[in-house]
Length: 231
Image 1: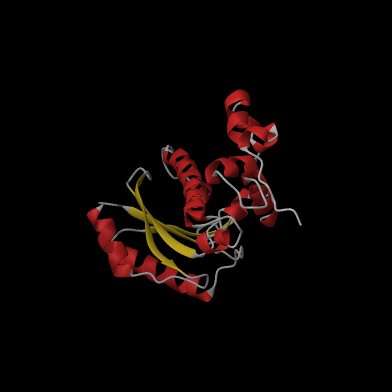
Image 2 (image 1 turned 90 degrees about the vertical axis):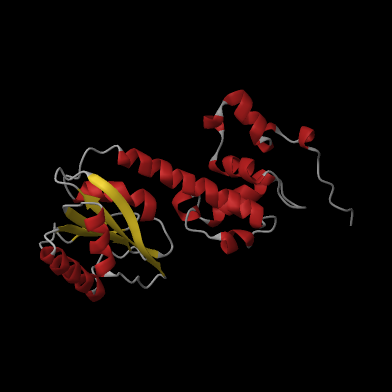
């Protein structure tokens, strides 16, 4: 069998040269796979960077949110993707999350659960693991700071209530909002969710730092303890 001969880049079709396509037609002309091809730069012995990127996107059903859930080992399972290329993809996905979060930071104040979900979904909505976050608010319900309190496996996280209140005092916060994600997509509050919410509420009352809400956030929706009358 004749050995596979890779064509030089100059002989590729325009659609397989995403960098040139970007220069001449603009970045908006590139597909998601072509943008990934720009990031990874090369494919493998049998696929161009574009072909490999298309295969990666097909594997996640052409859904960038699903791509954002992959870790380095997931990405390295594709032939031609090593540490460096996997890291480039992860870095690009994280920049996208942070850009969305930066837009949410322009919000003047929190007026309801939808504002909290909009603020935090870019950061935790599509994560493959569970994270627990706190929002520290002033008297105008403006966010002084947001902080990830813990990160755990898909089954849950651990929260140190005393540490949370210490942080609130240091930031001169007058109220708190908590949120965590459910990687499973299930919006039902578990018994553990209810227990930690009660603990945080009671501790906040002692310190005169009321708990305004606790949200469970997923990629497609959210559950608010305050909206459901559970606070």
